[in-house]
Image (cartoon, rainbow, N blue to C red; front, side, top):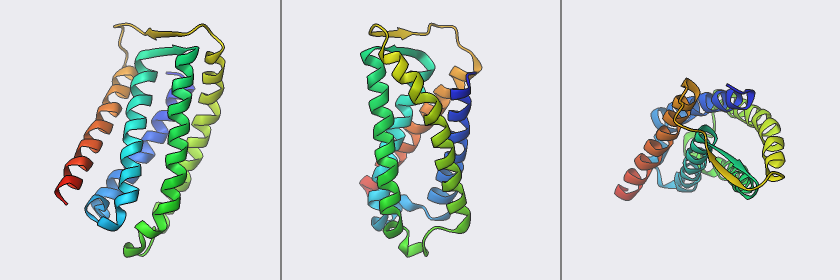
Length: 168
């Protein structure tokens, strides 16, 4: 496992705790109309992380394909900023974020920064190579398996959100 993969797994672990405990069990945000913008942003994030997990686990993206991954990462950064922007009004009904959730968000931001600080230079270096989209082969290891499970978790969360939003 590379340090970039390690940072991504730590980031994901913290994000899963935030998502499952605060967004689903404590507040069930998906069922509150005033949280629609925040929910839509989280759905965009599910798509981003599905792509990030699958592409980093199974492919090497060089040249113009590396620019695609950079675009996905920058889309996630924009989604993150928008999420921070809409969160106060989205959580007003619940009295705002708890101190614990603020702490969790601070940890998420810190880990995201560490991940991006290490991942973006690699991606920019890959843009300088000849364009190629290389499948890493059928040789699976536990990291690729774990990343695939994480990407499937993103699909499950996205599907759950779509299902609930269609019913409300």
